[in-house]
Length: 103
Image (cartoon, rainbow, N blue to C red):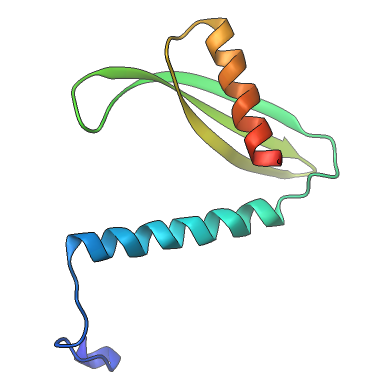
């Protein structure tokens, strides 16, 4: 810390402060990425589901990754947790995730 010009006695580094800083950085980065994505071109929506464990337990949950591509660019628009892996749940999760990214 001193080599960077900061006094260690003034800066609080805790698990919670690091988590808050990381969340704020992710929020700012997400806004910048979303603003830089050109929605004025034809877009293609891609999705894929996978069973993944929940971080707080050993339970497996259906997750759905939704990507949007167009004009030589591709962005992850979101990850949705699904109640089940049916086509109806995937269609609903895909449309809600894509629409929340666009609007």
